[in-house]
Amino acid sequence: MFITDDDFARDFYHQLTGKGRLADALEGHELVAVDARNARNARSATVLSANGAAPARLTLARFHAPRTCGSAGIVTELVFAFPPGGAAGHSAPPSHVTVVALLDQPPFAGGAGKPRPALSTADAMALIRRVADRAEVSTRGPAIGLLHPPSLNADQAADAGEVVALRSQYAVGFRATFSATVAENKIDTTLITGVAVTDPDVRHLHWVVRPVRLRLVRGMIARTTSGVRYSLRGAVASAGGGALLLVDEIADVSPRDSRVAAVDAATRHVVAAQPLALRCP
Image 1: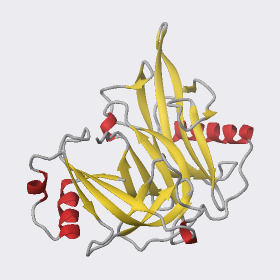
Image 2 (image 1 turned 90 degrees about the vertical axis):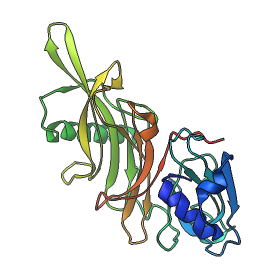
Image 3 (image 1 turned 180 degrees about the vertical axis):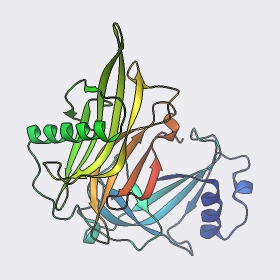
């Protein structure tokens, strides 16, 4: 897990080592590694992935100097270990997947709860389209028409979406393109993206990430627009019995601002996040 925050890096380095300035330790070095297994302030956390919530223990902290990871500030890299078997066995993430971690609360284990049955492919695609149509109305812009039916693909930048079964409803993420004729032989293309929790008939819809309209230029978000595309990667039952949605936020204009976030489905509060575009040595 990576954290881009200079204050966090300085404070955490002091907690682990009891030493003074992290800047002094990084002087002339690209990174400083600290074995956290026997640190006096050993840290535990809950690691969230599409597999669920898994308690983990910090084993290593690596502090990367400014500009070595593509970030202007210090990047803190946290390496966690999962105890074999036990509560974390089924919910620990597989290798090479993006995760987020809850650092400031007691660790817990859990899956996605007892979700509703998954929808068929046809029903899931129809639900994404109904939610996208509702978003077109709720964003209160000029009336525009859906350009292409959305498919089921979390990695597709547009005309796609995802459906994740929760205990009583379904979480839906989408990136739908709409078009309107603005002049003779000229079409203005708009991306509408967001995340909702709803029933299959969209009678009771709750926006977890409110939908936004973003103008597209050659398939990319216009540089004059500040916005991101939202992709739903999974859901985890929280310690309080609710649902945390794992959402990718992909920024076309400034890729360094892309991140994965765990969002409380009821309150819309981002409880944890980490950047997606870092490249650390």
